[in-house]
Length: 296
Ligand code: EPU
Image 1: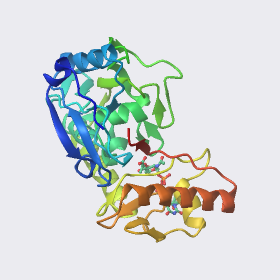
Image 2: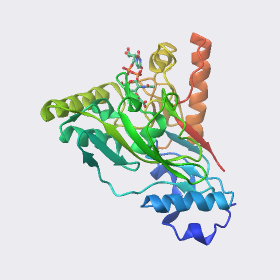
Image 3: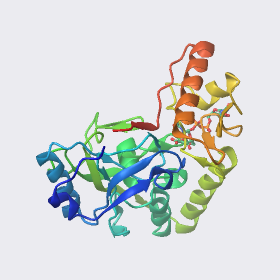
Image 4: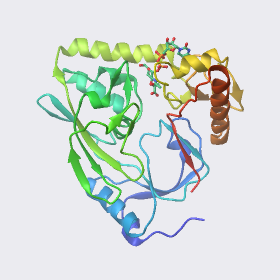
């Protein structure tokens, strides 16, 4: 049952009954009954404040590249649709949270700014990257993060510099009702062509070791300290293991792929099988990197 929403929410830009197959890179999940798509910070703040007033829980969606939704979602979902502009100021670059993360890395390279090359293969939005402290090749967003703007679950708008403990391996405090709005990275000047070449090389490396031609959600599990989840899953003999149309990729075992008609339930089941087998083989508990939303 979907609950009627107050007028102050309904006057904000929104769509109804949007399938999660179109909102997530894995292409599974039920229907998003209420998808709110503010185009300004003020609209995003009005959304959070209205939800607080109504005691209405909500979810925050980015590029949907790290998400499996089980069933239909009747609580409002927020997805920012801010203008797609990067702002350069000297050696800093600012992106709205709805900006493509890979596009930002390419934008930095085109500006002759070095320091974001590691990010050139990481999908999703910059908002998702902020929330997850996205990283690759031993680097992560917090290494270059100068300031960031966000809404608290009470709807307060804050801009600050990162502090120790706020961003860790693939996580930050910006979960639950927090909404990342934008961030600024501090980069270094460099030779534009060699930075662009590094970006292309990183994208190529990812393309050769990861199953990017199939629908996927990036790495499914976090790397346990000192080891690689992909390697552990591979050694457990799970490459190619399939439930329905959901499969453990034969190219990179920490990727699950959708052969076309997989369901969210099949992915959830496959994740359980992978965790159990890795626990049994290696005695290690894998922690999901993807978020799982249950029907609410
Ligand atoms: N490996 C295997 N079998 C596999 C996959 C990997 O033996 O099926 C081995 C590789 O041979 C290598 C080691 O495991 O020796 C590490 O593999 P890889 O270089 O692919 O890195 P990863 O730890 O699996 C991490 C990030 C990726 C990021 C790459 C590139 C995590 C969970 N994963 O993968 O990020 O693209 O490094 O830097 O941190 C993501 O977060 O969604 C993601 C894909």
